[in-house]
Every structure is written in C-alpha cells, then in structure tokens.
Image (cartoon, rainbow, N blue to C red):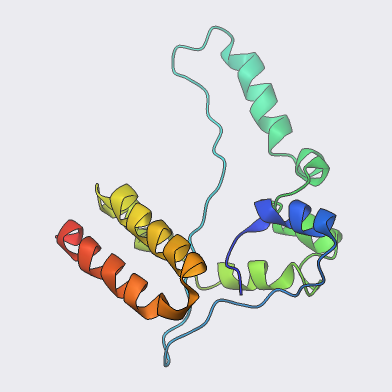
Length: 151
C-alpha cells in the first residue's frame, strides 16, 4: 500500500503499474480525514494593474480554465462531474474524502514543529523500507521522538 495524492498519478501511470485507489482507513466509528491542499490565487493590495489581475483571477478560476489543468483534481465540482471523475474508480475516493475532510484539523497549521514531526515520520518510513521486519519499532520511535514536539 502506498499513500499519496494526485501528483503521483501521472508517474504511476507512466510506469505501467496496475493499481487501484482505496479510501483512507477508518478507526472505529470515526470518519477518515485527509489533508486538503489547494492553490490559492490573490491580488496584492498594491498591484500595479489590479483590474488586469482581476481579469486573470476570473479566468484562472473559470470552469474552462479548471478543465484545462491536468495531473490534479479540479477545484470545481461541476468540472469533475463533467469529466466523469466523481464516478471513476481511480478518482472517486479522492472526491469522497472531501465530504469528511476539514481544514481546521490540519496539524501542520496548528503546530510550529510540524515539519520536524513530518521528518520523524519520513525517517521511520524510510527505515521500514530498508529494515522491513521492524515497522512497529521504527514507527514507535518516531512517535516517541515526536511527542515532545506536540506540546
């Protein structure tokens, strides 16, 4: 199993792997939550050409512009539906998780040490790939090293 996001899909497809996409696991009756990331666009308050910038923002967020983008999930539900992505077995789990995801739960937004915690987890995953018999030990060590950073 490999947990990732849309940005890896093109490379996985190019490699010719046969794969499926599954929703994130749940624990008991608690729903799964995923991190949501979006690309924001704005106009600086002191922009030299705010009217031109506004025209670009309107174009960039239009259904036609959103439909042109590849290797990402459309930010407009209407575009995803028109492309059949909300029913496609590869894309559907990504759209399904949106219903339970909440940006207020993102640890990286709430904890200044999130980068260090993420590094601990990345090292544990890498160590597990090298030493496949000790996943629990590596992950337990990451938890131990990270606990002090959560306070």
